[in-house]
Image (tube, rainbow, N blue to C red; front, side):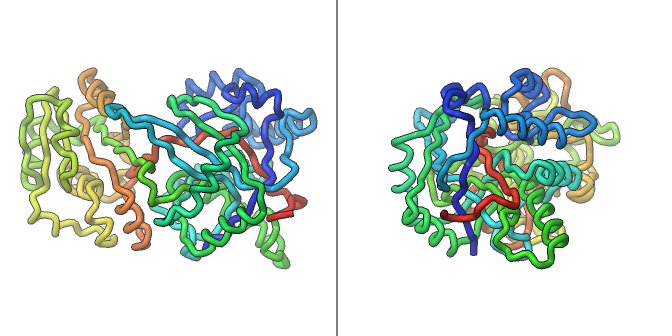
Length: 432
């Protein structure tokens, strides 16, 4: 199963690490244009490596800056290989509990999907994969870890992570209000225990499908160029943050569907009429009650349309009409039901590919923001969803299928810039 290796991480030098919050950045797929511009103003921020400013040769500019940072000592490489404990402490609205997502960063072999070791739950966009592959090919530097999940119901590794986090390298509070803490494990015996456990596990890719596929594309190109490769070259590996799927602190938040338009000039009343063959449509008094009204109920959604809230509940007998060519596990998902019976049947946007490309739908994670955008006239309606469960993610992945787009939002997002890793040809792999 999964082969992992410790890394000799590149990190900001000790002086800069004292102000690490000045140099970390959000991941490339969540950082907004406004955030990017603010981060670009700091010439040493990690965004210059992970999301170089657009121009004639962004990847070349990232390489130039990386070379300068290495030569001037902005970045220094740790002397010993290690596995890096990474804890994120956070709270959720409406809850007094402090969660802590416990994980660790290391290299994992960049397995092709067909090898059935790293499993995906969503499809990717080729243009975004090519962008990540080009950046990796030019810099040979991993600038941000993707997020993977392994399952260990015995929580065997947590005690080593807990011990390491007591002596952190640094900590920061990030743009999400999350406290991020980084530590390192360099004991060879402990590292081997991590390796043995992961060697018996599959890994589900939670976040970072485009970056992972960028590593796959680069690895495939290198193998094609060097048929005599041994399999131990550093470019076979990918930087990943691994967390335990059995942890109660692993949180997946819902992603709501915002309808910017209704196709064909549909009125609000006509949209409701089109929904009625498939859903029991129940008017509600207060839009802010919708998440609670649908909580825990399968195939139930909130709808905010024309300033009025409704509860939608799929008529159970119509579920058998769902004829997409996918697995039973995917057909059971709330979001599959929403995409099929609302977007395809009621609105006439036929098929996931057409829905992915349709400009009339976008995604919003903040419930109140969805209501506000309808009230402001920016959108016609918002469909409120329940969160996907970890059990559903695992069942879909093991069925070999993928979910509808934007099904999962693992919270919180990891940070870029805490550490970097090299996959250059002269980089040693494993324990020294």
